[in-house]
Image (cartoon, rainbow, N blue to C red; front, top):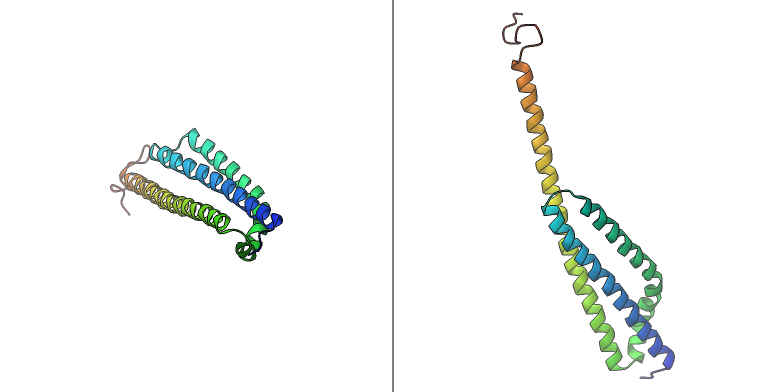
Length: 153
């Protein structure tokens, strides 16, 4: 195994960018947890601010991706040319990133289901109110006239 300085620098850069991605994902996870708490309290201005903060973190990920992509591409070949210690460091960071991503995706999916359930509940309430209004309208008296039940055909 040959450890050239260029390979080591490339692997160290990969670790650095992976750690940046991990930090972003951890901030997104924290924002999503805060969002969950805010959603339990109902719609609030805080949710809009959380959405903006999450959007900013996603933009940071978008900026990081072009710097991370080349290292991902060369890592399979580079892996054999760096020390076992450096290889373990990269694998450790990758494992942490994967763990945070799994947790983030799980929480986002859960939030999606919660929001869908709230949406469905709200739609059902709207339908019940509309139905009650129609029933009330069918039995109420038009202004100045007999009720619909009192009218003869």
